[in-house]
Structures are given as C-alpha cells and as structure tokens.
Amino acid sequence: MQRQFLIEWLLANMAALLVGSLLGATDGGLVRGIPGDLLLGGSVGAAQWWVLRRHLGDRPGLWWWLPATALGYAAGVVLGRRFAHMIATEHLLVGFVFGVFVGTLLGLGQAAALRRFHRNNQAAVNWFITTLAAWIAGEVVAFIFYFRLEGVPFVGLAVGLVSGLALLALMPSMIGAFGGYSIPEQN
Image 1 (cartoon, rainbow, N blue to C red):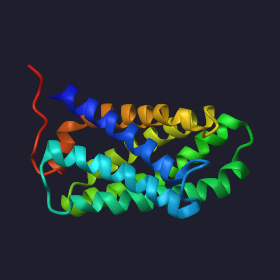
Image 2 (tube, helix red, strand yellow):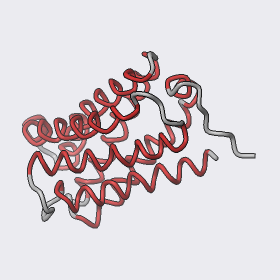
Image 3 (cartoon, one colour):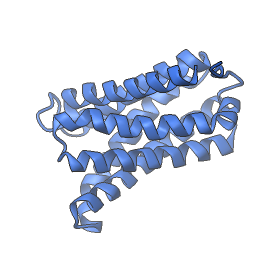
C-alpha cells in the first residue's frame, strides 16, 4: 500500500500543478496574478487533501489543508517574485531562492493546518522541512523549464517525489499526527 500511496501522491501533485498552471499560475493561464496563484495553490491543496483523506481517514480539521495550501503558496510566490532576483542573479540560484520563499510559506501554512487537527509539534516541524525541500526542488525544475507548460509535470514530479518519499519515511511520527490511521505495509 505504500507504493499505491506514493503513486497517488505523485499523480495528484502532477495533475494539480498542471490544472493550476492552466488556470492561472503559468504564463498564458486563464487567471493572472495573485488569484491565479491562489488557484494553483488551491489545486495542490485539494489534490493532497484528497490523497491524505483517502489513506488516513476523514480527520476533523483536515479541511484546513485546503486554505493553508492555497494561501501559503500564493504568499510564497508573491514574495518570491518580489525578492528572489534581489537575492540571487544566476538563473537556477534564483529558482532555489524562489523555492525557499514558496516552501517556507507553504510549509508554515501546512504545518499550521496539521496542528489544527492534531497537537504534534514534531510532525509539524518534520512536514515544514519536507515541504521546504520539496518546493526548492520543484521551483528549480520550474526555472530549468523557464516556467513553460511542458515543464509543469516535472515540477509536480519533483514536489511529489520529495514530499511523498519523506512522508513515507516520516510515517511513524506523521501517523500519530494524523490521529493513528496508517498506510498498511505492502506484503
């Protein structure tokens, strides 16, 4: 079942980033600026929430994952757009810094959501670090592709792979955070 979880997590992140990019966050999207960023963040939040709910159960407060992801992503993108080029000049390093902004604010939002439905500080810290690493990887990939639409699935793959593998590795502390539900081991 861990393989099934990881596959669902990867596909959910890839699909969410593609849908969110088509709606607004990528050049040529239907909605521009902060509303487009909120749509992309909301797409990611909804996809991740669906996988978490499917595998870990419907926990009271889990719905906070949705607005936390949308708002955290949008805030990170706004700050990344404003400051990443001031901090770094080399293209991929700008992507790294941009990822730090997105990962930090998205990670803080999701860690706060995690704390809303279970009081586990260590799980929240672990998830923050995971999200930071995942979005640094994802934004570096986005910068490699110069934010073109054909690169979006690879961004989703990077984000999903880093966060999904970390989630499985952190499962003992995360399971406690999600209220005792577990992903059954594969036989």
